[in-house]
Image (cartoon, rainbow, N blue to C red; front, side, top):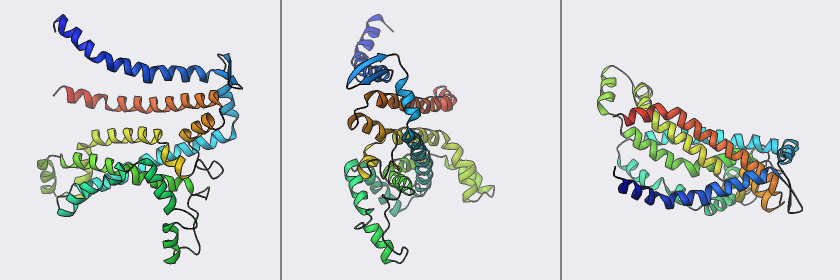
Length: 294
């Protein structure tokens, strides 16, 4: 590459690098600095202290937040990918119905977060919600069910809504991967006597392993960063039973004005996301190397 071409290449990517530094690196540095600063009455005092992290360790709510976050991320990711794989396998079948479904399945994904959250909040309402009334009229429940008011139920109800929201894109990605499996491999397995389940397990899954891994890790990142859905539907209630990292950080920052504690939680959340990305890069390094060598 000529020196002038190299200079042009650097000049073209400079605005992107500047934007990343301004909008990502800068705020991240400020949050990390604030997490090590004691904030009293809105004034920053005592830089270099671990008091904010010690306050989190002593906070009884934070343990519940970590538990709820684990249910939110792990349960949401496993169910989202599992259901998405099943739906994607069905959509990969060529038929008139699946052709229409491929076009319509993205509707939950394209709806705004606020619209989705408010619609589900109304449908799950303990008194006037259509879901509870339907269950009661069909005789499945004796009375109304407070889906969002039951501390033992609320997190899993939110996970179900999350699956409805996130699964369609996962299903379409896996549908495309399944449809790209070579027909000759499937035909060879069929001639060897493999049934549909065995063909899916021993032929389809190995061929879509890279896509399955990628969509799993990306789903974890999406779910970890999700805020609007749980906050609008429950606000972290009842009694912090649906409080997750994203909502608790918001509450500590903009309701209680505990900037230092909120920054410490943000650092922990960033470490969690960075660990997920590092795991993604580690798992897929050989796949990318093999793809690049072709």
